Amino acid sequence: MQAIVVRQHGTPEVLQVDTLPDPVAGPGEVRVRVAAIGVNPYDTYMRAGGYANAPDCPYIPGADAAGVIDQVGPGVTGLTVGDRVYVGGTAAGKSHGAYASLITCRPSQVHALPARLSFAQGAAIHVPYATAWRALYGRAQLQPGETVFVHGGSGAVGLATIQIARGAGHTVVATASTPEGTALAQQAGAVHVFNHRSPGYLEQVSTALPGGPNVIVEMLANVNLDHDLTLLARHGRIVVVGNRGRVEIDPRKTMGKEAAVLGMALWNLSEDELAGIHRQLAPGLSDGTLTPVVSVELPLADAPRAHTLILEPGARGKIVLMP
Image 1: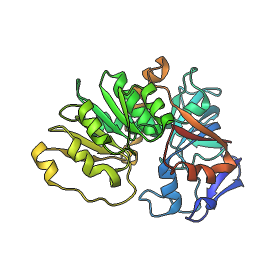
Image 2 (image 1 turned 30 degrees about the horizontal axis):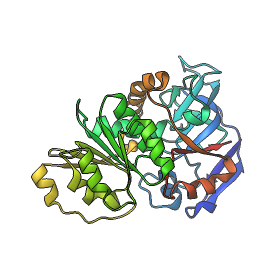
Image 3 (image 1 turned 120 degrees about the vertical axis):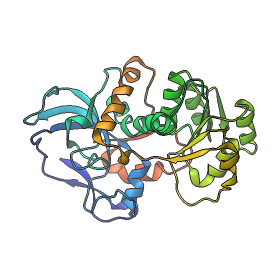
Image 4 (image 1 turned 180 degrees about the horizontal axis):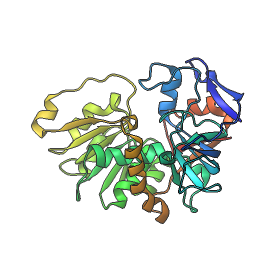
């Protein structure tokens, strides 16, 4: 099989295509012939080194993929050869093993891919949508009638967050930095989308959500966290989904509002907990409430380029590798 292998941490150039022996589905496993692989920002942090959940080198990056089951190991029931599936993690680990043309997974890591979705869209489900669900319901405990501000709404997680919250009937406001990103966030269901590169956009958010948002899902906390605390409603919650450095805040802002700043990472969840989230997502993925957005499809060998693109400003959905 073809796979991307990281033999030492470093710049995107350490992502090298290699030919490895085909894996075999062992007891309690299935093998998936991969048609598309999702690229996530954490893949780049892990590759660079120093990431908390990074495996030892050499390793195959990636947790998101989609394809067809082509081998079922002993003891597996309910899954058959030919099933279209999307993948969240592999038998190698929750957070790596997917940048390959063949992968083995435990049954709890594979989920039915609705016929309405392409394999590329399937590769854009696991991390973005499970993260969005966990942020809104697992961490923020979003309640009926509450409002949501997605600070960075045009990337894969931002769009998933908008779709999930809007699908549940919440008023959602978001930001983006390009006309294309603004259009995507609006299509996902945000009632207002403001340019977070424009002076005064925070005042526009305050005007759109008088009293402040009840929940803020934050994609770049090192830049925005102190601003979020200013915007937030009384008893509001900020969920930090993305961060790339340190930030100075005024803790007094949390006091008067009795605000909460909550961190989250999917790797803290068990496979059973993740499987439970995907069961919650399944109806929306089937009926069209939830539709992953793919911005770029690249050959597997272009993984270094994908790792560069995903960290550039102006995100517009998911970047996908095609083996």
